[in-house]
Amino acid sequence: MSKPEKAQKQRKRKGLPPMADVADRHQLYEMSVQSVETEVEFLGDTYRSVRGRPAISLREDFCGTAAAACEWIKVNPEHTAIGIDIDGEVLEWGLNHHIAKLDDAGRARLRIVEDDVLHAEVEPVDILTAFNFSYWIFKTRDSLRNYFAIARDGLKDDGLFFIDAFGGSEAHDVMEEETEHDGFTYIWQQGSFDPITHDLSCYIHFEFPDGSRLKRAFSYHWRLWMLPELQELLTEAGFSNVTVYWQQEDDDDDEEEGDFEPATRGEPDPAWIAYIVAEK
Image 1 (cartoon, helix red, strand yellow):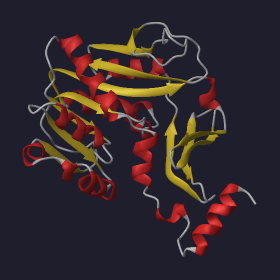
Image 2 (cartoon, rainbow, N blue to C red; image 1 turned 135 degrees about the horizontal axis):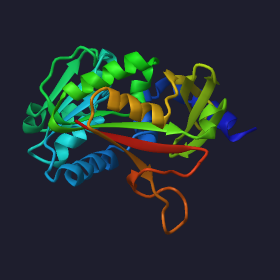
Image 3 (tube, rainbow, N blue to C red; image 1 turned 90 degrees about the vertical axis):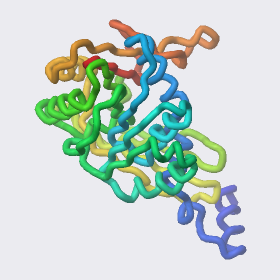
Image 4 (tube, rainbow, N blue to C red; image 1 turned 180 degrees about the vertical axis):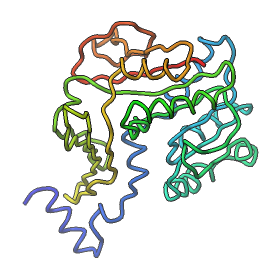
């Protein structure tokens, strides 16, 4: 009998449901995908480097659980943040698990808006982010350019817009990749890719020691955008300067796990992640 089968049998004997049935998909996502501490540090350091002053205000589009917005609030008592997302369920989870942990002063500096990022009316900010490839829901040049123009309008005069992207030859593959974590396995599946349209469907699954699976905990139906396209569209949307931040090689182990730095040329890595920073 395999270890998962033994674990499943033990849970049944104790009257416990399969681990997947009681798993919290948002918690698992944050444990396996997000690193908001690193993300917030990158935002602050990059803004100061580009603008010569510290950023104070942040807007997190497609904020989900608002983990990054809450982290931004926590690192500096002067920081303010706005989180915007159309999904009330995920915002409610963030309210109970992140916002509730802020003190009264922190909560007063955070504003959560349940709305479409295309229509939300909020004050301009120093930094606006659209991370985790969320803006890839816009599948045409016109719709993405329109969102970029709206993001630009949401910035102060010296504001910066941050997005991320991934690519490389493996981004075109239909595949599954497993990553072991403490108590569960994170599974990234690229379920389909159309080379004509660049439509890409991806799923996140979680597997547990008892063999149970939380299937399609998250589903994404995107267009796989390329870096030249994104730079062109940001420029067309009115941004004055657009810079790719490419991950550098770590000097210790020769793997691409170093810091992200401005670059005009990149290596043909089969799987890369990059940031783009657009100046208003």
